[in-house]
Image (cartoon, rainbow, N blue to C red):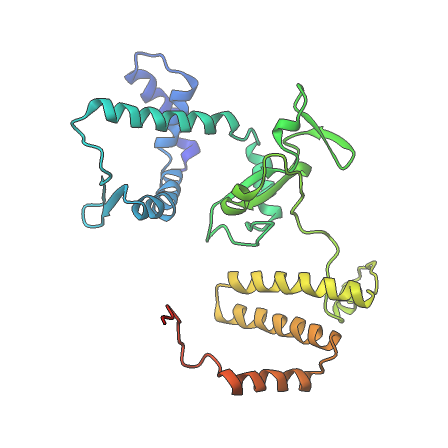
Length: 290
């Protein structure tokens, strides 16, 4: 039975168990508790980030055999005053978050994540590796009393898809409240030489520029960052090798632009390998002492 087929009996059961009266929030929570797919989703979230962070800081441990979390931080359970103070601090932090919680609709949130291919649009990290936030490019604090902002000279609702970008939690924390920078990838993109042939063969047409040396150097630097992020996020060996080949192509072009042919560059690589060695011994330097 799909969850949507289960909505009605869940609501009827909850209403009957609570005297025939319930708030919208209470019913929504009842639906959430009975949606196993969402419960399983938040179990994964719990084990991936809160568990890792709170264990690292010594707040609790997890008993795998019993599948139980146990608090370990030094707050005595028999001190109700201290417990109440800590709980109140937690409530205040939750309240602060709720005041700034996004009003972005589910459809716009989904569309923003889909457009970003579930990756941070600043560093490129995947949703599988780090939580992603849907962020307002022009912050909510800039909105007028009607919830409207101006972006790129156009007035729009603050939650308009044109004002949304996807950032990982780390990048989003580093972004200032007043920052209006749009980190989404720009449509201009350095491509391999034969891409235009592929576009033409598919029956499509494209507009393009031929870059000057300075422009090409800048584009190659940006391409190097792009390919590096894609290599880091590649999950399979074939994908990793594919990204390494792209990285190598970019590196060789940078070398050539700086006056190093492939042979000259490879000689430099070999010279450095002869002088300092490679990485075949897998040495991880930990400390150097006098």
